[in-house]
Length: 480
Image 1 (cartoon, rainbow, N blue to C red):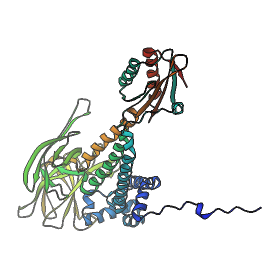
Image 2 (cartoon, rainbow, N blue to C red):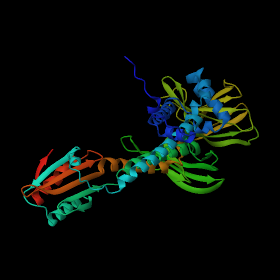
Image 3 (cartoon, helix red, strand yellow):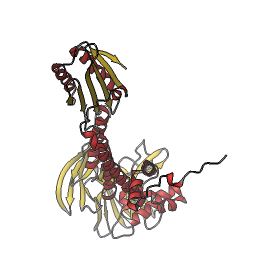
Image 4 (cartoon, rainbow, N blue to C red):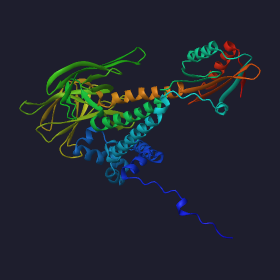
C-alpha cells in the first residue's frame, strides 16, 4: 500500500510576528498572567512569613545591620546572609517584587485594552433575525401562537412589554411579518474592565505605599518629651500627657495622648489621639496603640551641673520568673555611661524593687554593669560620682506612625472592583429576538429567543415576558 504524503503546500504557514508582536502576545497570554500572579502571591506570602525589617531600621544602614545581628540572626542563623542577599527581609522594596508588580500591571492594561476592543460591537444594537432556524437554538427559546393575524396594535403592545423590562427595541416590518430585536444592560460588560482597572490601581497603590510610604508600629515617647518622627519628614512629636481611664469593673474606658506636632521646630498642630481616633498631619497618621510606665530622672555631676532631667520610658520587659519587670535606658550625654532603669514588677509583689523604687544599672562600654543601685522616690543617691534622683512616676505612649500615599487609590480600587462585580453578575447584558408572522388557517406565530451573558435570573425574566405576552396578546406558550 502506498503511503500517502502530505503536500507541504497544503500545510498553512505559521504566522510570523515582530518582536513587538511576540511581546504583545506574551502579555495577552493567560499562562504568563498566571505565572506573574503566582510569583506576586508567593512574594506576598514570603513577606508575611519572613520578618520584615522595620522601616525605621531599613532607612539607616547601621540600624539595618543592628537588626540583622540582633533580630534576624537570632531566628535564622546561617540563613540570614542568604535571605539578606535575596532581599527577603525587605521584600516589598525589592527589585523582584517591583518588577513583578510592574509586569503584572502592564499585562492587565494590555488585556483590558484588548477586551475593550472586542466589546465594542456589543454596545451596538444587534440586527433583527429572519432565519427561523436561528430561533430554535439557545437555552431560552419558545414558539407561541394565537388564532388571529398580527396587527399594528399588537406589535405596539409587544414593544411596550419589552420596554417595561428596560429593553431598548429595534423593529423591522414588512407587509406580513414583524421582526424585532431588543437588548438591555449593554454597558454591563464594562464591569470586567472596571475589575481590571481596580487591579491596576491596587498594584499602583501598593507600590506607592511600599516606595513612598512608611510605618513605624512602635513609636514610643514618654510624657513631657519630644521625639523626631524621622523618615525625612522634618516632624517631631511632643507628648504633653497620657491618660488612661477605666470603668468600675476594671475594663478600659479611654486611652488618650495629648500631643503637639512640630515642623522644623515650629508648632504646627495640637491634638488628642485616642484608640480608633488617629491624628493626621500632611498625610502622616498617628494611631494610639499601647502605653506603659515611665519615670522622671534627674542626674547631676559633682559640681551640681544637671546632665539629665527628663522622663524615660520603660517599654521592654525583663523576665525574672515568675516576675516581669519593665525596663528602659538612656545615654548620658558627655559621658561613656549608658543607664538602664528597671521598674517594680508588673505582675505581682516584687521583693526586690518596691512600688516607689527603681533599679539603676550603669554600663560603661561593657555588657556587664559596672554599678547597680536602688533608688527611692524623691531621694538622691550618689553612684559612680554622679547624683541620681528618682523624681516622679510617669507614663509613655506607644503610637503607630504611618504614611500611606497609596491608600486613596486602594479605596478607589475597592469601589471599582465591587462596582464591576455587581455590573457583571447582577446587571448582565441580555438580548431578545422576536419574529411574528402569519401561518396557515389564520393563525399568527411568534418565535422568541433570549441570550444572557449570565444565567442569573434569566429564566425567570424569560418566563415573565412570555406570561405577559400570553396575557396581553393572547399567545399560547409552548416552551422548548
